Amino acid sequence: MVSTSLPGGTWTLGDLPVTRFGYGAMQLAGPWVMGPPADHGGALAVLRAAVELGITHIDTSEAYGPHVTNQLIREALHPYPDSLHIVTKVGANRDQQGGWPPARDPESLRRSVHENLETLGLDVLDLVNLRLGDAAGPQPGSVAEAFETLVGLQQQGLIRHLGVSNATPEQVAEAQAIAPIVCVQNMYNLAHRQDDELIDALAEQGIAYVPFFPLGGFSPLQSSVLSTVAARLEAAPMSVALAWLLQRSPNILLIPGTSSATHLHENIAGAALSLSDDDLAELGKIGR
Ligand SMILES: NC(=O)c1ccc[n+]([C@@H]2O[C@H](COP(=O)([O-])OP(=O)(O)OC[C@H]3O[C@@H](n4cnc5c(N)ncnc54)[C@H](OP(=O)(O)O)[C@@H]3O)[C@@H](O)[C@H]2O)c1
Image 1 (cartoon, rainbow, N blue to C red):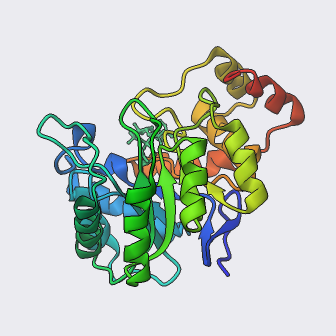
Image 2: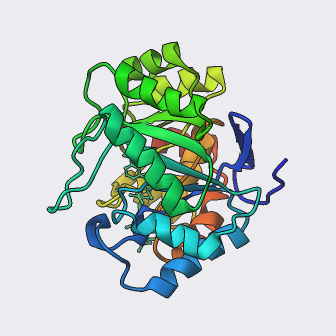
């Protein structure tokens, strides 16, 4: 059992206990998630601080950099503490322009799983998300061939648990009809509430929902309501946004991204903010 004083307590991903407050490593790569970080030592320090602060869930992908983020995680943290669980995703490559072309054919998925094992220095990946859709968001279409490929790799012992990302509710259900999933990682935050029903349905099934862009991603969350509530609470808007997610549903796990140890500390402290029913009602109007 993970014992933590981090806000939100813990959750069990399949059979893996993790802190609900995790860390998203994407911001550690260079601009637009391409190339190395400007401050290599600073990136290592953020990763080490995350683990020292008690975080046991780090989200990454071989596509970040590409290769860069996984290599930083390995350099900073390998050999990994038993309590640390690294979640990666497959299903997209990078192109010369920094785009994220889909790569969900069986061969690309197998190669990506092996690359993740290599760059992270692992024999087994704790949790692999199949990234669907495209940069514009989830797109309809069958996930069967791609998901079955990952199930095959899981049966070979290379993957412990599976999830889906950037997925429609129909694709989540299609994957679940093939094999169990332990999480869905989709875009969701105070201003983007398209997955409200899905979150509640997953909560009933004991499946985690892991919002990406919890702080708005490349376009920081901006809302006059959020600013008003934050000012009243004498808190930063980012803190309110994270605290709201933790209070939104017990199956929500946070993976806010930052390249700054200062922001990491601020986000952990801020997510512990207790929002009243009135605060929640006011904030609830933002994305509706
Ligand atoms: N499945 C997918 O398709 C997918 C897509 C995107 C992301 N993800 C995952 O989701 C994670 C989170 O997403 P994200 O990092 O893109 O977006 P995010 O967490 O919504 O926001 C990150 C941005 O917020 C800034 N920030 C963080 N804390 C701050 C603070 N206290 N004050 C001011 N600015 C702050 C960061 O800048 P600083 O670096 O300056 O702190 C960064 O620019 C990623 O790391 C990645 O692991 C998954």
